[in-house]
Amino acid sequence: MEYRAKCDTLLEGADAFARAKLSEKRYGHTVRVADTAEDLARKHGLDPDRTRLAALLHDAARETDPEEFLRLAEEWNLPVGEPERQSPKLLHGPVAAELARRELGVEDEEVLSAIRAHTVGRAGMGPIALALYVADKIEPARDYPSVERIRSLALKDLYEAAAESLRRVIGHNEGRGKPIHPASRAMLEWLEEA
Ligand SMILES: [Fe+2]
Ligand SMILES: [Fe+2]
Image (cartoon, rainbow, N blue to C red; front, top):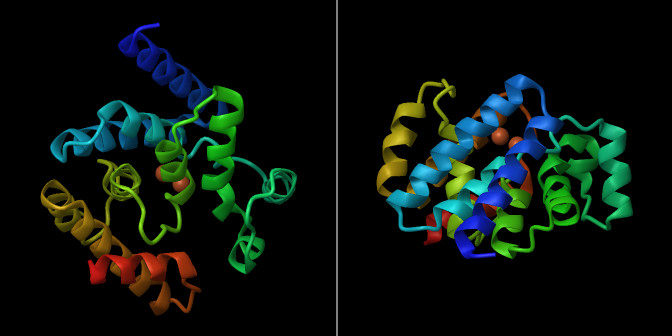
């Protein structure tokens, strides 16, 4: 199959997969993230199809039950730390990446790792992962005080936009006495050093 046709088939499959797995509301979020991530990819010279693919699948496992997350993680040997044991839905990225690989045959490691890292972040993530991470926070239905600032940063610099977004999440959680995932702190440190 030629490249374009292969891409379209994969994108259509991912779209149908997300639609089948998710409520209408979350599927709506998924499509908005996909459109936003694809736009960011074009703006920053990344592959729009691979970025869209990651975005279409990022939340595909979001509606799994907590016990099922832990069962699947064990079955598939996914890393489970204390934060994931406390809040199994943090596993929805890693579980979605496994579903993408096992059920849709996605083998593109950059796409899979973008899906895996979209929730708590990861230091050293690649540009496709960064575009997805930011798109998830700024899709058109997102509404919080600094969203416009992060949207305009995202047009100029994905690294800056991700750092600003992490500072917001970390500040917000600290303010409410909620734990910060070590991967989020590590990602912010990485971005601030860069
Ligand atoms: Fe998510
Ligand atoms: Fe999302």
